Length: 225
Length: 229
Image (tube, rainbow over all chains, first blue to last red; front, side):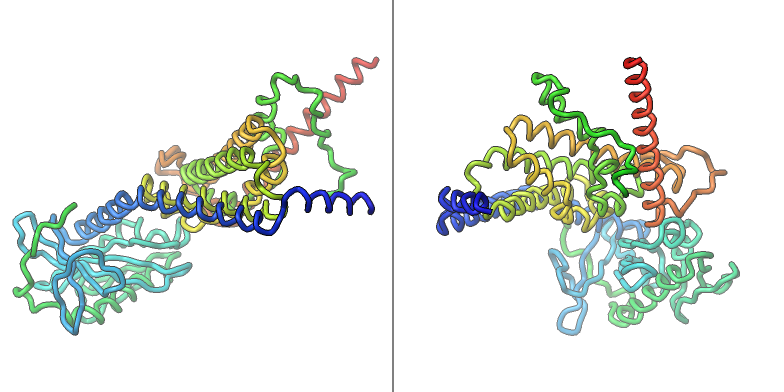
């Protein structure tokens, strides 16, 4: 007992004064801040480029033939070409061919899946009023079951030519016949239903806002890769 | 577990190692005899959460290895200037800094892997293995040994992650590092990729580890007996 007291005393005397403790922590915090900001600045261009590349790849995948893209933002009650990152602004993307001809929109949607939020991007051809491609961007669905919403060729393939009026319908038993029907995935009913619901919700939000077919804005300027 | 029934032999004492091989001794203990996962059963959260493929195991192992080695090096170097009452806070600041840097680097270098691991990279901050090595070892030992200890423990942790991730990937997806092994007739054992599969596989590996240790202890015992006779 006595020994403990002596030890505590000796610790206190070893220069653990209040200013010293505060200085140590302040210095640690300062150096840590510098290191983190340094790493952030050093990696930021690369991270931004990665994100932009991933977005471009996704847009070009869901709008067949697209080689260029333009962000369209819903601003002040109308759709208009926008530059830079979307941030929190509600946005979709217009895909253009190599020659600058408008090919279709890429619309993002998200909603609850079986495990967590599913975020996806799908292509929409306004002239034919069809969904022309779909890609899941984010999903934590069950491996081997729910993850077939992006691994199952049949399911993903159904979104390459899918009518949106009347709204997309999920059918079970493998007998999708109408142009607006998708076969559900056995063992992943909730996940496949979620994908259909997300696309329908995004359609309800965006289709009325699109430009009349034929009057889409031309590609404003070359987007830097 | 009841200590009296514990079949593990006590760890070798310091004296049994040559003084010259202190570095090697501190390094190698983390790989096997004091493996942070299979023996100390530390860092279970990342261990179970991200090991559904070998690649994820490698990425998580590499990130933890980097954080552990960096923190041990820095803290062992600074141990005499860090006042005792604020040492834990200082360790946490150091560890969190390394983790944040690792997070940015991984995001820049391997965005797909980063997306798979998600929040678990940030959670390396609270991996008790790392703080434990600082408090128990790096803050009391010379820099050289602290680094050896961190290399061994980080390596042992990474090794365990890859073994668990590889085993789960082989059984649950029929592939290893993304390379299909069994052809199209293989029916993947999906449960191995799900959370229960992590517990199951870890249980089997711990069992195997214990069995190997027990066998080795028995052999050593028999050798002792023969020597005595």
